[in-house]
Image 1 (tube, rainbow, N blue to C red):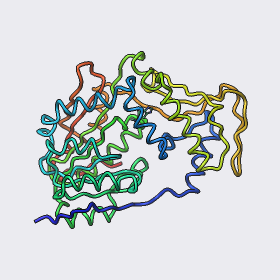
Image 2: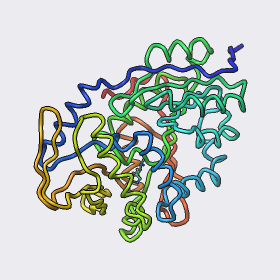
Image 3: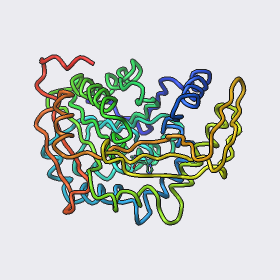
Image 4: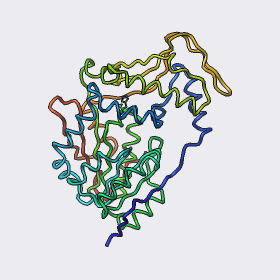
Length: 343
Ligand code: AVI
């Protein structure tokens, strides 16, 4: 009998090395054009601002995806293995996965987020509601590499779940914040994670689809200015990490759809010529010069299916809304015994 635990178990694989983070930030600030990775959007305030974004009338992805899950969750479950370990990437509040528990009926739940501290409350409360479901909170920055460490493997073993099928769950179109080459790498790693599980393992992933610019651009430049605040807040976070002196009020939020690259780009533009200084460096930004902070790729269904296939997944199914604005793809990782694709 699998062992159950009334309390979730937590494992933090490693936390960011501050000197590596400073080197990464400095490299991006000195590049032309300057850029900062979107992960710096998510300090405590940034995460709250993102939550507020998901409630904005202009930001359609969250509610559109939720409606697709509500309408088609049972059909998705038929395409995915029963009694799987549900591996929730970027779990946050764990709410999206929890809403699917009744249809997916997982045998275990692994919530992955960059910080287990962020998961602690959410997973603790969820465990109270599902006392028999084994739960693991895994603190891991999977944007650099997605792989279960030995502690997580031990936990699966201790719960008799190491041979169970796995469903890797990656909702919210966060895959869109990776460029296509990075997205392929992450999907290949997700595929390898599935192949370590039992037969039938697969992926359930939310993807934002190409749509008219008139819909896309307001979603990233809302009337209340919440997305602008979210973008500018990145500068405060960078100041904390790097010791820089960015003044957020001196920067203007800009978001536009780059049709050629099929992505929304978010930038911060210097309102006037200014010098930004940090210990060991500085950069002069001319008036109007930009700092690229995020790309959000919008996929055509056939192109995303091809990406899934390239990563090793097969039997792809897609559920969408009536306007085809958002897609939820389910795909299987293939037969046991066939080697997974090399990275
Ligand atoms: C988290 N991610 C999927 C969001 C997106 O739509 O690319 C982040 C975001 N950026 C601005 N608004 C929302």
